[in-house]
Length: 544
Image (cartoon, rainbow, N blue to C red; front, side, top):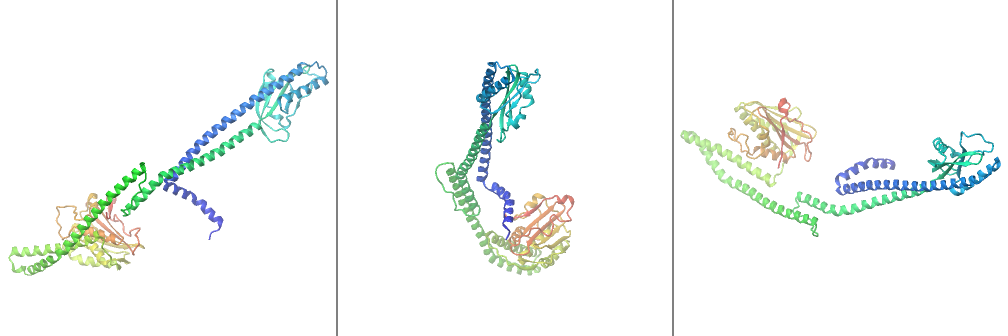
């Protein structure tokens, strides 16, 4: 068992795939996720706008208050200075202390700095510069001092970061103006105001907006989940019902509740299901009647056919004693009775497939030996057409679980078809195998077929050229039965053909019962197909 930390790592690695799978498979999950994301984006935009607006309003309100306080403090201090008649250094120093006390009281700020404006005549009575800014004196920038020095009747301010005494750093404002002292000259006055209270208010507002936004987003998600569930549930029921219908449960229906759009959809769906059930039942009954008819007729024809066969054989054996016309008639009768027997046998076999009553008698068999037996049995027919039959088996000597009778029938149909259309050219039968499949291909080099003809090659009673007469018999059901035989084994029967380049039929079968062939050991198109022929479509025969 894996350690807990490894299990946690695997869980973190697989969650994106799980989320992606949920996104693809759940309409409800996608809808709620999109709703939450869009709502969250809207809430974030509104929250940011409100935070910025409130912050600007708080700063502007506090700034107006600061400027008013500073202006009143400066005016009060200047009034004290103007009303004094101090002449010596001690009196001026005391006067400046009184002005400082007045500024502190009027501005409610302990951060005060007074500097003598440079460029004035030296004075023995001028008091020294002083500042209570402490380490924050550097926040008074040269630009602010230049502006205050050059404008004696104006007030200037600058946002700064203040550190007073042992407090933490925080936002603040420094307001500068000028004072005129008797005898001593002009002085720069700077008053610092902390904005920590406004910052705390803004932080509280932002936290409130954040909590409210998260709560609102979760609430929107929950509401969307509930609403979408009410909408998705009927759709899910309809999807599950349609799947059951597709799997053959024709009696299943969607529950009908209310008079809304969903109820209308349910009634329409149920009406469609009723119609389909009725039509499928009718078609099944017609198909069953047709299959029974074909089967009954085929069985009933066996008795008169046997009688005709016996009578025909007697006439055929004695044809030498007949007149030429009667002799030819006996030969024709014998040939057509043979074709009739083949057609009757094929009709019985195809009716068994249609009725689903075919059972395989599978046993281990070697496809090379089966191919050799079929080739030996058809060699005389091939020689009569001037055709040479070749067997190539580089690696096909492995047994497979097949029904030998049906595999022989497939090979007889394929080789007979190749002899019929091979125009006397050689026919190559190849057998090969791999770990999961065995395959047999029948390659001829005759007239070939077009792509349009290849599509219909496995249709019942279909011929590429209706005007062309069969020279070796056949019923028109051979390839259709071969396709059914291949499917009954869990295999495939494919065909490739091109006009003038011949044809190649490929039978691929699993090595054992329940084994699905993944890759056929033989190629289609065949290796000897020309460059232009390889581009031709290879159409897989399939059952409808």
